[in-house]
Length: 155
Image 1: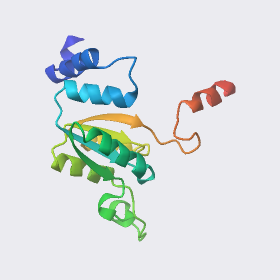
Image 2: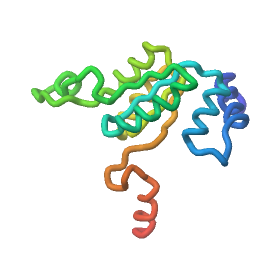
Image 3: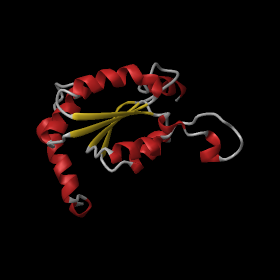
């Protein structure tokens, strides 16, 4: 088991033990973790649906870190440029969001409300650590935990 835990992974695990608490909310935990890891540059990649929340979070975290925020429609990439066809629809650009934050040297990135799949591309492309603040869930007011009671009734 020890061989899969690199020195970087061990540092992250130790920071979790040292700087997070069951008495803190998720935003406080991210703040304490980032401070404990001596993060100086923080990124926020968000769905444009959550632009207001991203602005509030940016103002909050800017008291402690240099913060860079990027919405999902970054660079206005057209569907035909990614998937082909002739659609002029503007697509989400999760790889572009990650590249933007990579270019700004962010060490920890917060994923806020990115779509399923888009969050995976963002996480894979990001050079910095990635944590989710919340997930998009169209039918449950962005609270995917509600779906558990729905599927439990089916079982």
